[in-house]
Each structure stands twice: as C-alpha cells, then as structure tokens.
Image (tube, rainbow over all chains, first blue to last red; front, side, top):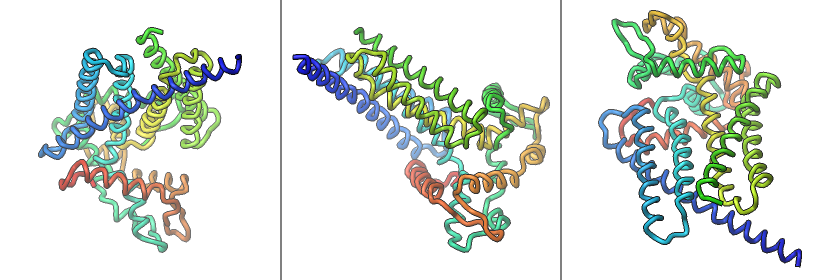
Length: 188
Length: 171
C-alpha cells in the first residue's frame, strides 16, 4: 500500500513536470513569432534600425502575444492557465534577451572571428602577426565602433569632439563598477 | 496553490540562482583566479543546481510544474551573463565609452585612437586566441588550433545574411 502511494505521487509529479513543458513550448512560439517580425522589418528598412529599436520591437511583440494568450485562456477552456501564459511571456523575453546579446556579433564584424576566419583560410602555413593585421580593415577596429555609439545615441559628436550621452555614462558606469568588483583593468 | 504564488516562487527562485551565479563567477575570478570560461561554467552549474535544488528540496511536489521553465530561465540568465561579462572584457564600444567618460571635455577621434589604438585591439585578440587554445604561434607564424571560433564565425555570418538579406552591414 505504501509503495502504491509512492507510485501515485511519482506519477503525479511526472505529470506535473510534463505539463511544465507547455509554457516552455509557448515561450518558444512567442519568441519565434517576434523573431520573424524582426527579420521581416529589418529586410524592409532601408537603414538599419538601432539596437534599442530591436529591443523595443521584441518586447512589444512578445507582450502583445502574452495579451492575446491571456485573453485566449480566459475565453476558452484550455489546458493552460494565465500563470502558464505569464511564465511563457517571461521566458520569451529572456530568449529575446539572449538574442539581443548575440545581435551585436552579427551587426558589427567581430575582429576575433574575422581573425579566426583569416587564419582558417590561410591553412597549415598560417600567417605572421603583421600579415594578419594587414588583412584586418583598420577602420572597423575602432572608428566604425565610434560611429555605432553615435548612431545608438550612446555618444554625441559636437565640433569634432565626442561625449557620452546620459545612457552612455550609465553604461560606462555599470561596466566600470563590474570590472572593479572583479579587480580587472579596462577591457577592449 | 494560488497561480500567482507559483509564478512568484518561480521568479524568486530564478533571481536567487542569478545572484548565486554572479557571486560564484566573481569569487572564481577574483579569489580562485580561474580562467574566464571555467568561471562561467562553474557559475552556470551553481545557478542550475540552485534552481533544481530549491524546487526539489523546498517546494512540495505539487509545485514542480514550473521546474522546466525555471531551468531554461536559468540557462538564459547564464547566457546573458556570459555576454554581459564578455562585453566588459572585449567590448570595443564599452571601452570607448569608458575612455570618453574619463575625459571631462570629451575626446576627438584622434584622441580616442591614441587612447585605444587599433593595434591594441588586434594584439589583445591575438593574445585571447592564443590563451584559449584557438590558435598557436610557432616560428613567428599563427595557425588556427581549435575550430570553435571558425564555426561560430560561419554561423553568425549565415544568421546575419538571413536577417540583413542582400545588404552588407559590417561583415
């Protein structure tokens, strides 16, 4: 009898765990739809939108999907409850955050990956440091990133001098504090 | 159990796991002087263990429904944290912002290049490739060692092309 009770509890636990994959699947669906909207719009724009526009778009689409989901579970008899839609929404936003953190590597060329590509193309003979450096577009190493900061409203240029905006100052302060906690110097 | 309480318990658990992850990483880097990638792996393992441990240990079996979501949230947090830390370590824009902030009157582009020259960008990345074993230097020549960065570069190029279509940007 005791073992039967244990078996029933285990079955219920496994059933609950299986139900727990529904909000995960819904979160993936929310994110995939938001990503599809992002791709369609990015191909349509003539000028590349800023990173903050990307964030705003993904958040807006996912919150809209959550609202539709809440209305759907409230109107229809569904296996999911409002709590599952809420969890799916939070998880979809986190998936979007993962994408947003990866996005700069696609939007701006990564020197490290470019170097790996050049070394791979060079084959077993390899390259000297000078040869590899000459293959790197020098402007893209620093000056293009300065332009990105201005485009992204993290820096502003006035009379040939650049200063941080309030957002740029906040971002710099966050990383200055983080590097201080780790006891490390300036990165880059 | 009330639905809203289950959701709050999930978010609270994931928040605790995130704090444990950050603390573990800071300890591993500052005290144990672990390599960065090892510190991130240990931190992610602590975060996952925290979520699973809290759900299995503290919550009753009836509340286990959101454990899969909690595990995936924790993995997402680990990924985002890795990139956050990587931005501070390798991010050129972050470095430039820090240089700008250190000057009360701002900097010209020439002054930015003097403080953060392209040669430094290049040298730091060669050093990272060597330290991570992605390439090796023999007889003054650099050769690609492992394939992880080369594969990552190809994947990111494909994703970039899918999103930006025929327009070249950056790459």
